[in-house]
Image (cartoon, rainbow, N blue to C red; front, side, top):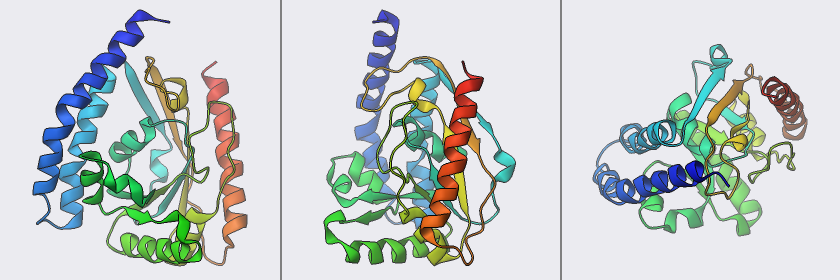
Length: 241
């Protein structure tokens, strides 16, 4: 094990421990503001973490395909390898919300700030009622100017692995009448799932062209997104060999 990586990872954790509790108080003080303003203030915490990741852990990133970003809110369907993308996407994309388990809102400090960022929080045990809730909230958030970020694999996967792509994100986009934006990245090479260690390197984020959802079926749309993401993952991984 690389001692430098361990030390830098510990320093980054220390920054999180020191910064997060007082910033949670800042987040709570944004309550009187509108949702977008709250998001912009609270997401400054993310920018601090990204700064720390770059200057402490040596993790940088590059974006290709930024010209594909549409002018209107859309649903981003992304590969999920790391905690890194949940931070970086707040820097790369406009104000956004995630589909999350409602239990995350109960986490002290982190959950409180998350709640003020207007997430689509669902009770996954509620079955079809949860689906209806997700579609309604997703359409509402998009109408308010938020982008919706969905990881169709549902959980983080190791580099080179492929999860089971679910169609919830496609269903939100079709229900709301907005495009989907496929995204591939290789964040797992620097910060693996459930790992404390963070390795230096440059992460590549590749943004595909928006896909129109008019007249589409969620399953077929998801298969198209999956094919693009997985093909792009192979290209990115090959380019970084």
